[in-house]
Length: 170
Image (cartoon, rainbow, N blue to C red):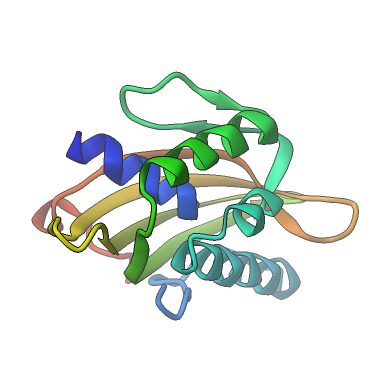
């Protein structure tokens, strides 16, 4: 349940660093693309921190796919939104106390990009329950739309203990 809750909360925030910067020196040669991806990461971090489902869904391509452990693929904004809404309904009053996202190794090819991220979140649940303190790693595939904005096309998340998280790229 803890793993599933972690996946759910990450996606709900979707589930970029507290400053949403990139931990490593990425192989991006196009500064405009890098700036756009960093703006996407900041928006992802902001949406996650505020557990704002509408802002999260706006960061997805219409046919985006989220892959979470022990869960069928969530295909399309409608399925992802329904999943987020169901999670929110099961966690009334929950709020994000801490969210950190460190992304690294941005690579681009035209209007496509990938990066991997480490995340840590602390979610306050009901007053009589201990907070959820979870960590994970994820791989993001982004696509730049005709409007120039980067959006999630594919996301794969996996839980990780603090000691299990890979070191950020130098």
